Length: 204
Image (cartoon, rainbow, N blue to C red; front, side, top):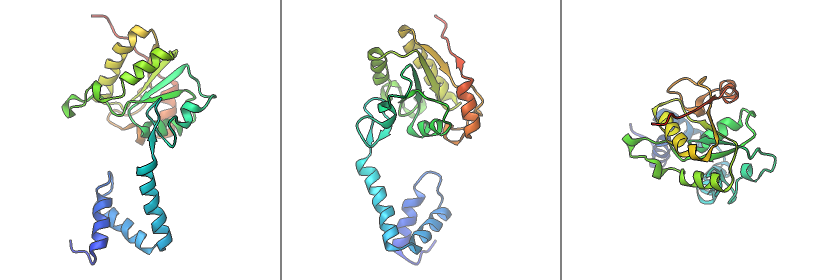
């Protein structure tokens, strides 16, 4: 497709490289930005630059943060006896939107997926185990998407956590199989948290 300007083609190319944005959507966004004032466009550009430059990762839970320790880990009102293990920051945001969980989080940074070369060593698992040895909790909740990678990660972590004697549960499968956690509606996600199921691993 021919574009009337190299500048607009460049913006469309960059926007279309983002997940979930096709070239038609990228074109609409580029034209919208073009109609904005120079000040508005500069604010958008600067916010993206600031995001990339200034964002940190919490040294406790690995969630994104403006400081070394995120607001959730720093909040004395959060329940330290319950720890929710999630794949990524988007899942923390999804669960927080339900207003049903008052514990703390640990972000793995992915799920075990041998086909893509992602093993336990690529995830924030060692820091989780160290965290639990230093500050044990009463319950671990696994809140992963309902897919093979999620199930594999649950199985692996359950075996790793068993010597610590911590109660382990998983959010109820009210979430459709194959659907990512971030796309689950708030009511379903809230019910899944409240109706979580216990997990056990047989010796053998």
